[in-house]
Length: 284
Image (tube, rainbow, N blue to C red; front, top):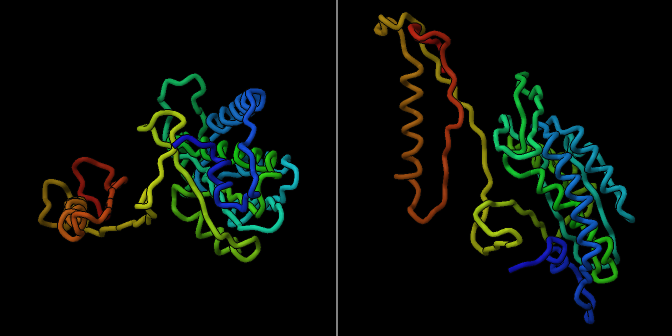
């Protein structure tokens, strides 16, 4: 199936009975390629960590405000942005894109790598990159907004564009909901989101009635031990050993507690303990 993101959204909106095929002229395509390509390049070179997406949010708000008829609100749930495009009576469709980067150093070899560094909410300065494609997500959202505004004579309804912060830390959506996303703004009849994937040919859209992407939660586990010299473990309680057992045991939840046909993933992405090779630490 090959469709633009705007046409996918339009399928959820009220279409006129005699709606003609949208006009995707080469001139429009060339203009989008130039302007949106430059925007993607900007976002890719300037990623920001979760809850720190101030410049990204400001740029998204600016670009959305430039679209005729768009009502833009900043600072929803922190750095979140909500833009509403009303076009007569019809369904309300929410279109969501996430905007935060990851604390990773880019070593992709591309011509426009991120060299950004930023202090995260944990107070640690880290290199930052858009390793998960959120630069593509927000650029695609702008393309969808521009196209729907250009073709407003072909659909009826309301589109709510959500620029979500802190997807990588899993708290941005909850923060926007707590800040009145569904009460301050039109509550959607349909909610749409997408994620880029490298395993499909360019221009292909994959959709399924089954689970495509799941929700996620973060859990921090602190194991307290009793510190001692590494040569005398009998005088302490080694939290690294205990935590290592926990890591292995967590995987048994997937292999032995969940049914074989039920999806589930547990990943231990960080393990911190100790500061010296021959000292058993007090916590992990």
